[in-house]
Image 1 (cartoon, rainbow, N blue to C red):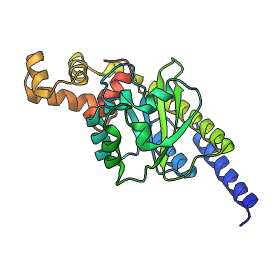
Image 2: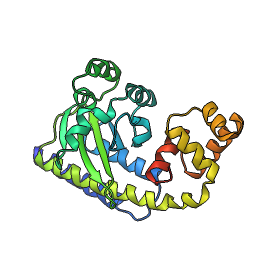
Image 3: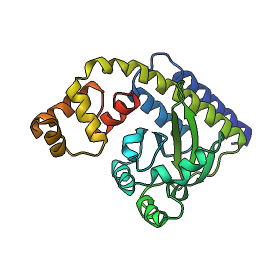
Image 4: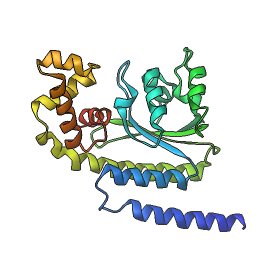
Length: 248
């Protein structure tokens, strides 16, 4: 097949993808997750990640994570490394409006530390050699890092422009789901919010029980109901969504 034919097929697939992505019926994070998977594959990457840009030191990566196709074990290990806030990725995104591309190990490591070697070990089992990243903002100015990772080479200028535009549209769709989920503000009880707030501060369930003067069983019950009300799959995601909605 000639290159022009390949380009025509890619353009046709890209147009079909965009038409499905801009549908106003997309209202949940699960639907956006599906679209992000499509976008990732469409541009030849294997994994994606969307996370809120940290604004201080020692902010847990997992609590900033919004959507991701990273393996859960990789998320856990990178969260434990506590380098996201000081990573080369975050630092470079803060100083440019343009997308960046580079080796994933170098971008996710923190300069002047020994994390590069440990990160290389973490990523050894995953096809995340290179990463394309861009910083996008919500209507209210909150900054997010959007990453696509894989073994592919750097996109040329035209493809990078297509990719940035696609990610911008996807991010706008994601922001709509924030608004749809805002009704959770009225659903969460004071105790549920307190439990989420203390958990975000790094307290364990046992510690929260002592602080609030309730049983560990009751704390666990509050977490379960808060997780359900926030349409989350686990406590960590519930905390991240509560932070994003300014509940804690």
